Image 1 (cartoon, rainbow, N blue to C red):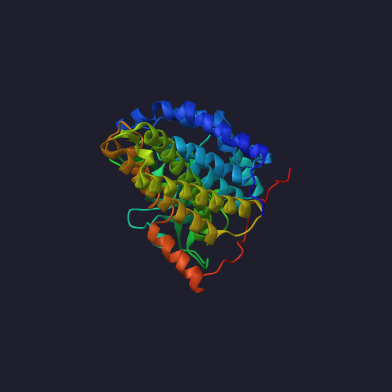
Image 2 (image 1 turned 90 degrees about the vertical axis):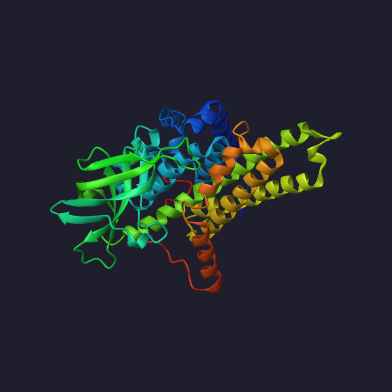
Length: 397
């Protein structure tokens, strides 16, 4: 198991870091303050080749591996969480799941436009009364000839107002399948679809989040991923991909906290010496460095497992759980180090604190991951091979 980054990895990291420096950081403070998202960021990410990361070249992608996807997420979140969310939703939840469950025809139909950024994908599982208990979703699809008629709604959907297509999970009406769930790729221009933004969020204020609605929406049967009854398995595998990108991004927040705190600690003088000389401050800085380095190892491991085709539900849950807690702790300490200034939007650590709290809720709450890890440790849960797997790296041409 070799986690040394290749020259290609380093170039990808550098490219993502430059993108964050030039396209995210200059405007993010104002966008966050105004609770406004910038849809041009999606186009710029596509033009920079970021949206094709982790997708094989035969489907229009960059032929880069899954560790590359993690590196991009880390650097984008170092700029701002809203940028990493795009990768989590578009690349992780949507494209990776399509790559895993789609037929060859479906992958050739949808992935090239997604990889180039011509189209943006999103994901819909959560509903007003079904979050962690996703099995209780109410959105329903009923077979009608060569279509399914879908009715219901999803909430807390990232890119709800900007995405061109959505991977949604529904219940099935009148089905003989063992599990009454299905997954569909649907276009936002389908009659019966509508969206509405959610306002007043604590964090990720520069990201678009909303609700999506389906009213007698007719979706062709060939837009189903997998078979009738596969929907819940599709959803859970999608969460594995999404959790990977969130875990990687959490390391970016920790690094951003260090970026802000190290110069502040050296420049801020109390008495006759910089506060970085104070042992309690050093303790907080050391804790951040620990979280960053452990977090990288955890998501590198998951990236390696993805590259080699291994089931990684336990490992990605651990990475998401540990890294997001470490990110929130680092942001909390960053505010502490900045004192009163940390309580002000004058410094970015206030934004990191708000943004890092959200990651402990989405893609599986802190409590859910605690239970998952306990069940693995106690032997109540074990991984079984999935019916379909992601292509291993290097990808076949």
